[in-house]
Length: 257
Length: 257
DNA sequence: TCAAAAGTGTTATAAATACACCCATGC
DNA sequence: GCATGGGTGTATTTATAACACTTTTGA
Image (cartoon, rainbow over all chains, first blue to last red; front, side, top):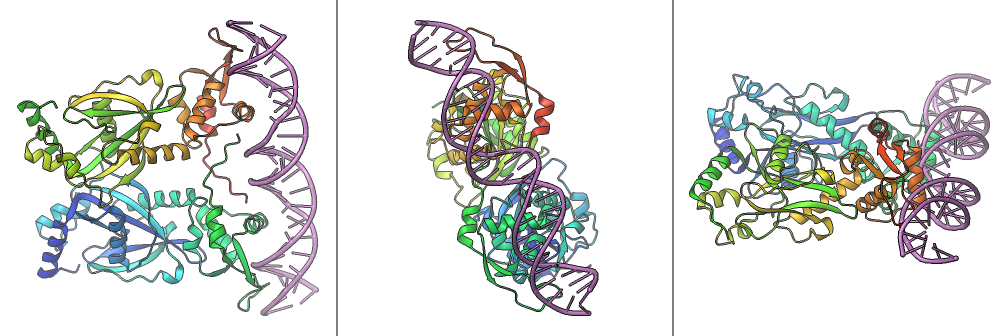
């Protein structure tokens, strides 16, 4: 396990001093690679386990800004629209054993004490387009990588729970938030869009009905028969009509009266 | 403005020592008086402004339990089902002036410093039946009272914002959470239920369609023609079929494909 | 010409929505 | 009898959902 230099430890100590204690932020970022939803996970310098990106809030910083900063520091991804999916702070959310159990953290006691306190964490989620999803590990991290959400069941602490809560929120907000703008590239085909919906909903969707609904809603603008050679019948290329799409989001729920 | 005794101040100091700093919880509790939605607001001993119930989280206490405890301490209401509606912590959420601006708080400096720090607050909401909604002010409070949500625009700090966020969440969760069980008494009439829906949705609803939908869903059990003398045609009494009601909550959203 | 994936159409059912009409009560 | 609020029915439109059929491509 890598050890931190004296300078790095001093730096970390200074950073932690500027933060609100016992409050953390964790981010679940989604992308769609054409087949499945994926999220980035990070591996700190001094640990083997994988976590979702997370950190602490500066005293003079809003929690929203903190989430953006932390995400950028740990993955280099920027310009994301973040939304909360919940705040987690049961009495059992106390991982001092799991954290200090690793004998060779390379941290002095004061830092170990600080990070192994009982924490309340605010969960944020966001979405990034595939082409903007290049990751670069932050200062104190060995590695960052994308994993399928279905493989997110062995993360550090209670991070697997956070991921599944974020997925549920994503699902619930599919019709009320402009998720497509964030997920899809400039141009795409209906079969591609359908696969995204299937990945988010976790179930197959009927092709005919899906197309009908999408086309009737006028959120898609046809821009040509296709781009490349395809193995079978070439799909039609579309792009989002952002204006119509934003208007189409269900601000009002149907009640039947 | 009332002053605290030396003993009370010592007690408060001991309490605060046991709490997570810079993290608070605020509760928005709804009841329905037959006409409008109402929430309880509290007035601390040493302040004139009205706030929604709120407090701090003990080190060894889950945030959910903390919300229940705080609510009980400040209103004596118990056995509520609490849900989060958001966590608030913008950099501007810093009310030291508003808090210490009141010159006669009656607190020593260390306590003023503690409570006028920058706080992140977790918002919880819940519902209580009218007949279970008797309030009793807590130890450090002058008064507790119910106010209409429409009159909640002059609360302390940013509490009016919290209330409006809670109302939005209530609205959004009307079809997915068992709110009726908490709002309605054992027996009620359809016009009464309709008024609740109108209060929550903030708009009139069609009587015919409302009745149809309610009756077709089988969540109501007819228990008699009426109870008392009424001015006009006596409405029919119903009670909730809790089993059917819970099953009827929309766990899956309609997408059209 | 065949498989595979894309694209289109048809139909049955259920839900949403707008109303019109009747009923029971007190005055 | 009539105003008032409670209760019921009907008709139109729209959405959901299942599924059959056609088209285009590469091999």
